Amino acid sequence: MAAAGAQTGQNPSAPPANDYPTSARVEYVGECMARNGGAYVYLHKCSCALDRIAAQLPYDEYVESSTFARYATLSGEAGGIFRDPEHGKQAAKRYRGVQNAALRACGVSLATPALR
Image 1 (cartoon, rainbow, N blue to C red):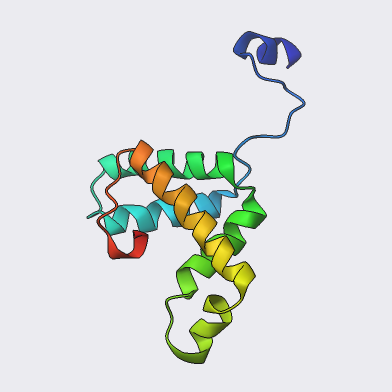
Image 2 (image 1 turned 90 degrees about the horizontal axis):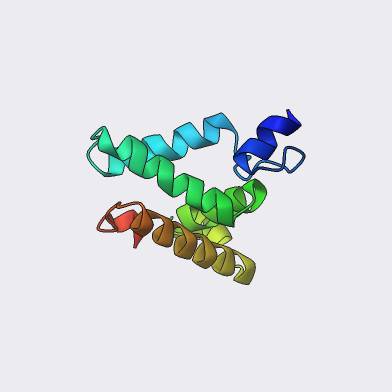
């Protein structure tokens, strides 16, 4: 195994850069593809975007910040739980910035209202 890591330039004892569970990856890519008309090319573009997000945000931070970003748009008291706390605002802002940069880098349009 060490020889394989040496040949690829990877440290075999280092934790994986993209330690997101498969189910989270499938969910993100599926939603991203759906927002973009479901074309097959978006399988690769959306996967690319999630790889870039995963390189910036540990999985637990991704879950928390994407949850704040997603649910802050709910109206009323339910949305206020996600919209009002300062920590939630900062987490959502960070996620949106990381996500938008990743989508741009991977050729995914930001024209979808949910991504602005």
